Image (cartoon, rainbow, N blue to C red; front, side, top):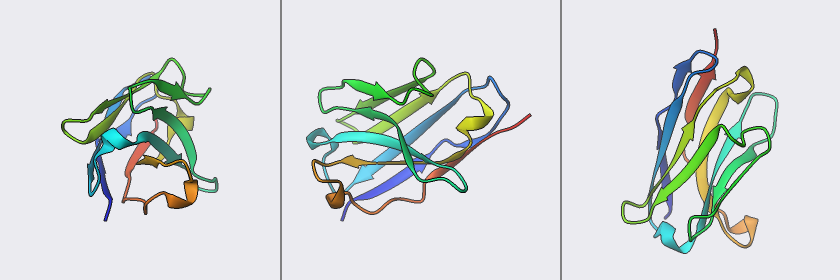
Length: 118
């Protein structure tokens, strides 16, 4: 069973930074593209950053230039460096695999909460 443990969230002022981490068990992440999603109240979960198996990143327009996704296949972890945070970045952040068929995506972990507030 694939499981995800996200950490690193917290309360930060606008313009601040946070680094999120995701530990994955039950599968080798080297097999998969991986991603970070944000789920804010009243909205659907959206993919904010993804990284291919060979390390190529892609970002949602709203976070491009501010967020950096990375992976450590040896440690089976992915990270998300978040800089210049804005109020709109507030939400629960979740990591998961990006399988070819989205229906094959494993269950979500507990996520980690990021709150940007002055």
